[in-house]
Length: 110
Length: 364
Image 1 (tube, chains in turn blue, brown):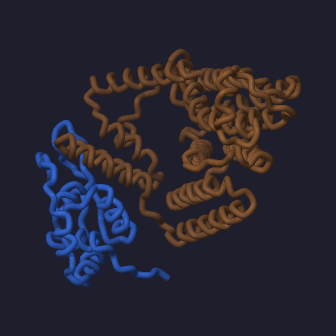
Image 2: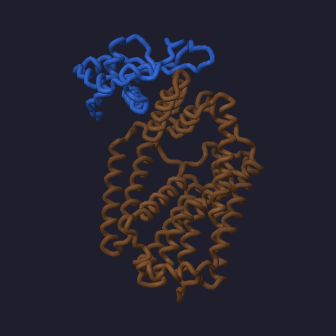
Image 3: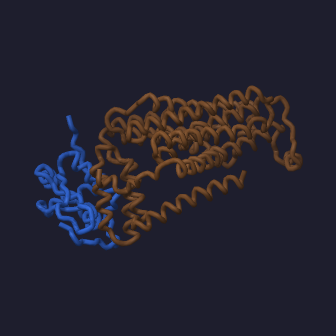
């Protein structure tokens, strides 16, 4: 029997960000910058979502020259349903860390 | 002794600086090194995520951003999401209860050791919790791993027992109003446990070779010290100098033996460090036991003759043992640094420079 626990505000923010463009593959640092979440928090969230079957992962097929392919993420069908079922209270967590972030090099991003 | 310590630290720093310089020439900065190192701690079933985090770092500009990202990766590596949170919580709560009970019991019988026992209990509990949180499937309990773990824990237990004997026989010797020594000693012993119980190197044969050589080196050291302790009349400093020579010899033997067997610098250093971790607590336990077996304590140096009357200690034994305990706690840090230096020199002379596994997380 699995118990469904309500995700943390940061996880809710990640789900909301992913469900906003459900077909688009996103990468981890892009989500970090968009949501103002540190990598040390973002990746455990992504791991948990993937463990629960809410997130599908893939590797970039056409990476930037001289750079390794990145890991990409988007919600599965059940992930989209789960994200839609959550109350949109992610705004608070989105705005909680609105510090300026380091510039992201976007060349080669999918 | 201080000169030896400074020389050892200088050698280690030179070797580390030379390695860093080589890596910098290859365009590898510290955040990449940090992430590679940290992500290797991730459990095998999280390895894909390690590759993902490392690949992402290649797209991050700016030193501060790269450092922040690297620190985040270290955090993920130390505390990855657990698949069995209930078991982790049980271990944490049980460990804290045991630590609290032990601290209360010790406070009632040997109050001078209360802080030490409390800090040691909490630190070991934290370590056990992290190990359980990171555990995946059944642990690989090979024979050499179990023997090394048992030997390390026995040596640490012997050290603690020796300190308890001092606290019972000469309570004033273990009085520590600042608690700095108590906390430091507890954290150092926890560090020993963490290093001794590290999972073996992934390559099964190399991992076992390291463990066997370290265990063999440590047991040879114990045997030599046992003979020395039996043959030498108990007096302050009687066998202490000899212990150092034996420790250095056994560490060098284990490191060289591992290097010759595996042709790996990393395995060589690891065997040397493990030998040091296995021998240092036994060294301390033997030292303190030797001191406690004395029948008469006398002040021999001019400094002690001047300082003792003003020290506030009730007797000479407490004064000398307190001083010796401080030195032994310092030695638990100093001794492995010297032995690590010996291992690194052996690795440089005998081991093949290990293929830098920077690429390993991506290419494997």
